[in-house]
Amino acid sequence: MVRTRYAPSPTGYMHLGNLRSALYEYLFARKNNGAFILRIEDTDTERYVEGAVDVIYRTLNDIGMYWDEGPDIGGDFGPYYQSERRDMYLPYAEQLVREGKAYYCFCTKDELTERRAEAEAKGETWKYDKKCSHIPYEEARKRVDAGESYVIRQNLPESGEASFDDVLYGHIAVDCSELDDMILIKADGMPTYNFANVIDDHTMNITHVLRGNEYLASTPKYNMLYKAFGWESPVYIHLPQVMRDAHRKLSKRDGDAYYEDFTRAGYLKDAIINYVALLGWNPGDEREFFTLDELIDAFSIEGLSKSPAIFDINKLNWMNAEYIRKLSPEDFHKNALPFYEKAGIAHMDAGILTTILQPRVEFFAQIPDMVDFLSKLDENYSIELFTNKKSKTDAQVSKTVLEMAIAALEKLDDWTLESVHDCLLSLAAEKGLKNGTMLWPVRIAMAGKQVTPGGAIEIAILLGRDEAMRRLNLGLAKLSE
Image (cartoon, rainbow, N blue to C red; front, side, top):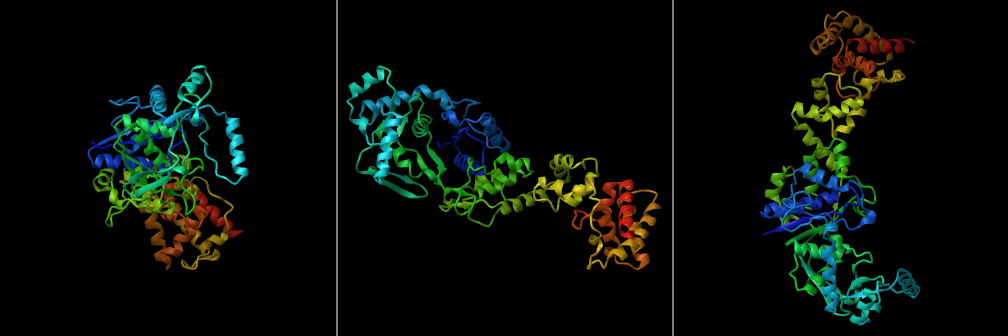
């Protein structure tokens, strides 16, 4: 049975590169009728971020990537918090020590710093010099039992080849002379990430490991651990990195946007997942839009690329806009409402707001800036805005138009889209004006800006009779000065 795992460290929030790894692991498991396991690798206590675990749960649940085993629901291979598995790692490391495949190291930080500096002064690349590997086991045990501080290091051969086979990258081999004896158990008794990862994957029966290709260089050492224990290695599938540009990858440390940053900005989760899925994977045809279930059906390892994927915010905006266009008016309003409230326009006609905004919005956080004029007019706008060659208007034409429009609108018995529309367009026809010549000055007076979602008639209804007439009279007064 295929078993994949998403094993995040709670050291920050989930940016889109992390999310893509989880997504591919989930898709691969579901495509192969396997199990998707959530494991929280929380042994790095210094970098632990309060609340990060809740974000992991919330994000995966929000998307619909439900796990089969995990800290909150249990399973046959728990515990699923790495910190709760702490007692299991040392016995495995001590087994390797007894077999000569690892050793106790008593070098202090100061000693290591001094030897590293000496190597660098000679122009040499520092790696641990195996000093403690020559201490007889019985002597080392006595020092451990006496309470001396120590770490346990992997005892790698000094010659030969360390290698593994990757589904995407093929056979990867490294000369053992280039490898460092990595620490397995730290001085505080906690396992290092690399060691715990191997033990956990084996004891949880993980069959396939999908992770970023930044781990390609360290995987030979992982594999040496599997060989040291006599275990079968999982199938490795190293994924191309997600880059913010040609030179830098997405990174939590660099503050790249997290999944929840995008959802708070009004990106739709389905659009985010759709876009993330295509960062390094191709379905093999021309399709660009997928539901999560459709991604499961379409996903294959053969569609993965070796080349880095560039995160393109413009492409995400385009895709999100396409999803927004397909929303029902009710769903559009539901998503837009928090941003209407922020903009101070939640009391305005929902139907008109949907009509003018749904074709224009790429993500919902754009709304407040797009409609700022509705809640508060910038009364210091320039009368130069009234000049428009296409509509054949200038300050004088606009003054004349506003005088006529105000007089006609004041006579209306009701204030509806139909009544305002008929009033202004009938007036234009009566005076022999083009519709644009009539509507441009009216819209500028009510909005105080050239570019607005919606035209003069929609804006008039959204503002209401009193505010619309106030602004029209203000515009006329500015043109009369």
